[in-house]
Image (cartoon, rainbow, N blue to C red; front, side):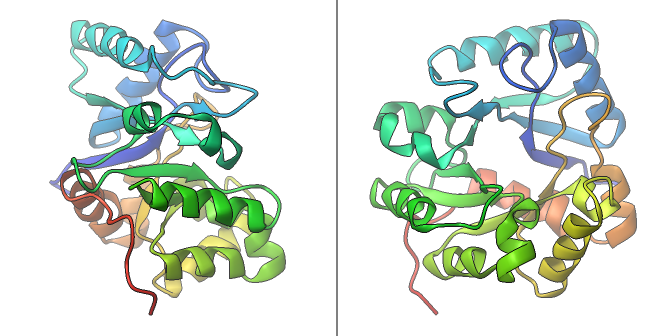
Length: 242
C-alpha cells in the first residue's frame, strides 16, 4: 500500500449539498482522507435541482478549500468535479459540463449519479446525450440503485455496453450502506464490471474508506491504478458495442 489512493467521488466542499456544512468540517474530512492514504481528491458536489444548479463558482470554492488545507499541512491535490444528476444534463451548457468533467482534453468524462429507482429510458437518454456532446460517462454507485436490487443491474449492463464505466462506493463493500448494497457490490466486483471504488465521503458518518477497501481487496487497481488512468487518459465518448 505504498502508492497513494485517488478519490474520484468525494463531497469535500462545504455548504453546497448534504456534505460538510462548514469550512472546518471540509478541512477535517480531507485530513481524514490524507490519513487514510489518499493524495488526490476530486470534489464532486451534487449537481441537481435540489442542490447545485450553478457550477460557475466551483473552481473558486476549490481554490478556497485548497488554500485552507495547505495552511493546515494537509497534502491533498484537490480538483474540481461534480456528481451530475441525469435530469440536469439538458440544462447545462457545454462549458458548464466541461467545468465539472474529469480527465484530459479530448477524453473528458462525467460522473453521473445512478438513480435510486431502476434506470429508465430518461436516464439512458441523458447519458447518450452526454456521449453525443463528447463526454465519457462514469456511473456513480449503481449498486445502490433499484436497478441492481430489482433488475439484476440490467440498466447498468446497458450502460456498460454503450461505453460507460461503473464506480462502486467503499461503504457498499464494507457493509455500511446495508446488505442489499453489499450484495450488489460483491456481485458487480465478482463479475468484473467495476472500474473504480470511491468513498463518496460526506462527513463523520460517511468518512474516507479507501484504506479499508484496499486492505480487504488486496488490490490497488480500483483505488490507485485505474483512477490514475482515468484522470490522465480519460474515457472515450463512444466505444464499439461488444
